[in-house]
Length: 259
Ligand code: 7PJ
Image 1: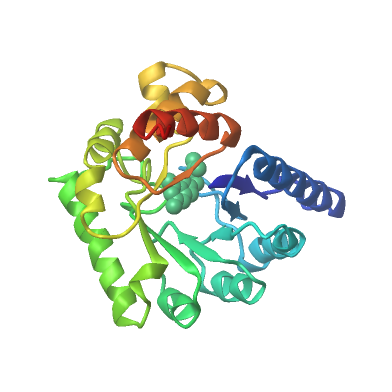
Image 2: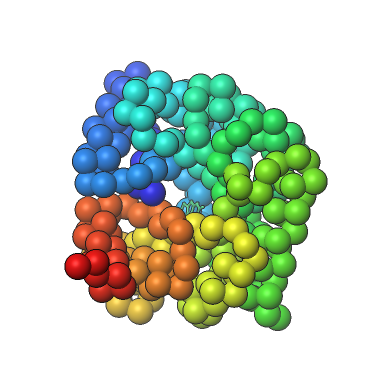
């Protein structure tokens, strides 16, 4: 899953079109590099990020979906707003990736009737403050119980379980220690019976180990993606598609050389 952000810092028409054109070009590049899914984000959810209105988020996402639908590559939308979910599903989005795990009022209803894929992610707290003091008695148990509970709620609303994947939410209200405990425990989370989606690309947990700034986390991110797939992850959400695809091809050859 290749990450495409369309979050213009300028709200002039010129800025908007530039951001859209750049996002479309970036999407085509990631498809050429081997992305099987694109994850489109119109609102930054990094720690400390400022909120974006539904109107602004849709103004960024809808033209992008329109432009990319013809590629045939499945389009995921990273959003937690029920109104955005409705609109992007109408526009042809194939998957909704919700960092709040469909907890906003109306979110489950927004997705229940369709057939799109759904990613349920765990987050402790909310983006603005979640990294201030993350605390767990048992991080793996609590994250697993949360994800299982949300999947249950979706099922109770009529969502077929085949539509659901789960994500422990690396960096979302977690210390580096929590993140690595979760990574080590992916097999236990996989035992819940849903595919796992993992997002570790360029995150603080990579910088904490390598000592590298965000622009120099490629090798560390690829190592983490491989470690995740080795522990059962079905989808890895990454910025660097070409490098990750090469690494996974070699990993797979080692796993199952067919001669
Ligand atoms: C994730 C995400 C993640 C899912 C972001 C960043 C922060 N969605 N959206 N999982 N991270 N499902 O990419 O650094 O880990 S935004």
